[in-house]
Length: 136
Image 1 (cartoon, rainbow, N blue to C red):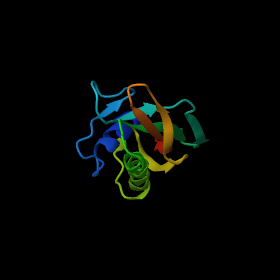
Image 2 (spheres, rainbow, N blue to C red; image 1 turned 135 degrees about the vertical axis):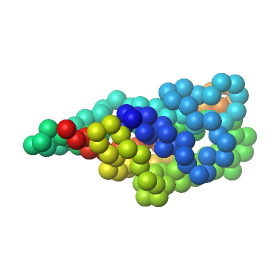
Image 3 (tube, rainbow, N blue to C red; image 1 turned 180 degrees about the vertical axis):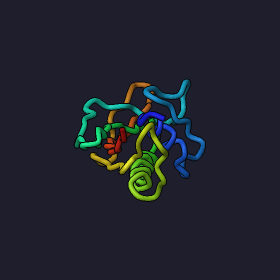
Image 4 (cartoon, rainbow, N blue to C red; image 1 turned 45 degrees about the vertical axis):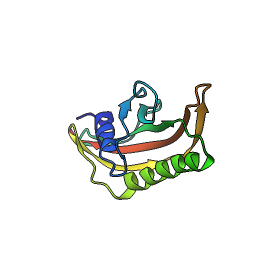
């Protein structure tokens, strides 16, 4: 499994997903709430090892899109993303990836509003770095 596929599947296992659809690099069709996982530019090799393996870092973001009407609903979206970040950083067993393993996932931003549109959709986003080790 690739690093991004592992991330996507991991987000889909979040216990507090509450039937929210999770999609990759897009949002669920139709109106309503959904979670989207996006790859981000800037992946890099952090360290190379003498055996040919390496430690790499892959940035990704998770966006929660909904149409909240009340301030409390907007705050809950931020809280949900913050809780997801805590879960990813310490309460989860990471899936295996091709010839390697995930070492850690760290939030590099706090959850915050990204945008809203004229239809009333609001996007809240949090960005992560996934560090993994690839073996030769």
